[in-house]
Length: 264
Picture 1 (cartoon, rainbow, N blue to C red):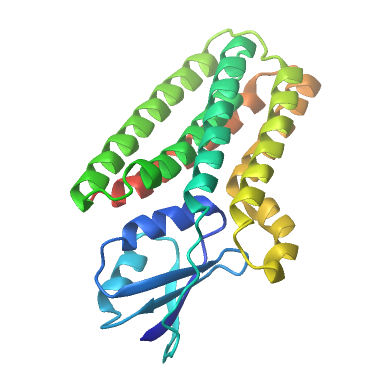
Picture 2: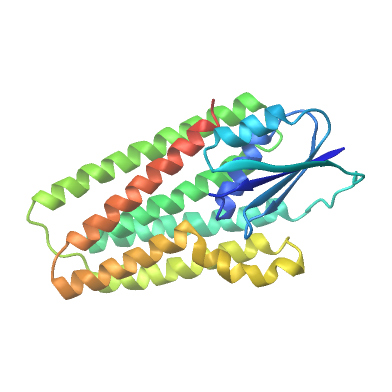
């Protein structure tokens, strides 16, 4: 058995962990994957050659780089019996907040909330692919990933069109208080998701949970919408909301392309 450690510089939340798991799923010889999200490290236990594993990690464009390889006597690994239950929990939280943010975003005329809801939907897709394709064939997983990726891109493009319409049109100001309040709850929800997913980690890593929350893209987006809401009120302009919406739509499309990579 060999052990290779990768540095994954863009692995800052459990979404990336699931993408990597799906990408490496099915590669013969892999015995276990050990993720250290706070330190952005992945340890792969395997027999055979590392070439295909390394190629797959690099193809995800998450800044993957091999650090070291060594022989190991470890042949038994702790299986997390609660992994499926945890994935269901975070999928439910993300999907519920997708509905909440999409609904309140439309009612309050906030593109920032609408865009953030799609980011929540993107995470739901990742967790959903992991769950619904469990035990399925590689072809089935790739087909699901392709549908999810294209659906996400379609929604983001519709969002871009709406942003342009509002930018050049005479739209009413979005409800800044709704933007701020809903985003605060979404911020809390993302923190809960990260906490739930990290319950399976060792106690030694528990102190890193707070830093993980504040380095996650989802949390940065939530804070961005909150700031945009404040600026909407202060400047009496809908431009901050449209700007944050555009930024988030770009991030959503980037996430969609990551999902599409799994279908290749």
